[in-house]
Image (cartoon, rainbow, N blue to C red):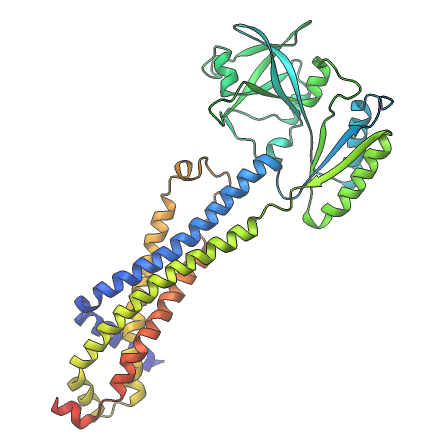
Length: 402
């Protein structure tokens, strides 16, 4: 142990003496380590951003969806039966996260008159299941189901066409046409594309209580049942839920699907290999520069090495000492690269880079820092092996005469 510590101290002293010779090579190594570490962490953040974007569209892993379609005119209205089946399934299978998801059109009274508006009727769990991002106000709660008046969450276009600039004024809107009811706007979602029209979300039970869209009957769409379940139970629950809904709705065709196949694993693996390839090539270039400088340094130290050999220094001690100079140098450069990578990743403008903020921003991956330090140390060992071998082969008599 004393020999190892002594070799490390000696290597550090030699680096201090020849710091200008190795500085340029170490800059390349530090930059390469920073690239490997930063890109690895950025790939993880990109994967998380893609995951959240997918979950906003299709739900968290694993989300099962059950759809039903009438097959004939004898298939009567299904909303009541479907709701009852849904409640029984939640209790029977112990499902915690579930929602009904129904797209329809509802008349709202704007400043220029009453217009049919795209409405999504849901249950409170949808906010968590599909990461609904409310930029102002709040999402629905379970207590909102029993409110004395409907509550709605609208997009920014809806609020703008209503003539309101925010929720500070507690805006309301009339919902319905024949007997409209005043609904309170409690949240606002972000506008997602330039030509987006006004949209709103309302609790399913409140919409059923206060307004019935025209045309509900044969051929009218029914809500999709969505549940968020563990991956190991998804296949079995899909069969059971499809069977239960089909039994409750004779004359209806029932289908189930999930969101398991989204290609995240392939994208993550490919991006990581690209990051390692680019960083590895940069490390190789830095290592070659370090080899050249180490060889020149050894040539200038031949006399010193010969004197040390004459005083009893063994070949292994000479080899290990020269080798550790490169290892210590690249380890220090790797540490600098990791620190720089952490600083870069922590200050990445998420909204500008990914288009929206991450709800679950991943911490800086320790594995990325470990990989960066390991690569730097390995390059140092490879770069130091050649000059260390040259130093061992120096003959004492030739070295003293040098």
